[in-house]
Amino acid sequence: MQSIYARWGRGDTALDLMSDDVVWNFSRHQVEPEVYRGHEGVRRFAGHLSDAWSELRQEPSDFTGAGDRVLVLLAIKGLGRSSGVEVNERIAHRWSVCDGRVTELVYFGDVAEAQRAFRCRASAAGSAS
Image (cartoon, rainbow, N blue to C red; front, side, top):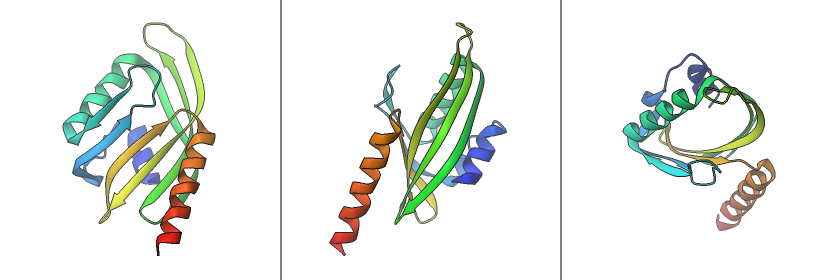
């Protein structure tokens, strides 16, 4: 996952690391919640970011793996393109991976919620084995 954030920082979508039917679930996002599907959906999302932000940095600080999932805690720092408003928020991304390719990205605006959901999923997976 670290390489994806590094590539995003250089303006690369990193689609070669994602399955053709990847799902980016931003339904928990407060502004324009949506689910993006496939490489075209990822491109559309990237376009939305470019339209909305004159500056945007994602600074991951913690990567926690459990099975086929990785939880990433990060800071989003940016400057709104039309509003000029500065944003500095802590968020989380939960990634799912299969056969070395990303199959899903889920956005969490609430880090504590993301951590609870991740722990519960990891506990359930451990008890199923």
